[in-house]
Image (cartoon, rainbow, N blue to C red; front, side):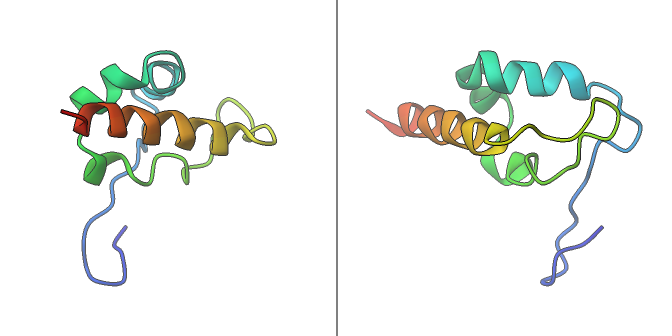
Length: 77
């Protein structure tokens, strides 16, 4: 899949490690932020959770907030 400007956007098409990825994002966002650059994870809350059911109300926003806070901590001197 590509964005309008031609950049490639990858998804976990084979559900290889999705459950662990999202669990780490929720439970240890600082580890996820230290491991995966923002440019490579910015669309992770846009991917439907087909195998585990839809996102619960507010769940995406909560995850985004946790990652944003972890990004801010990483950027702080």
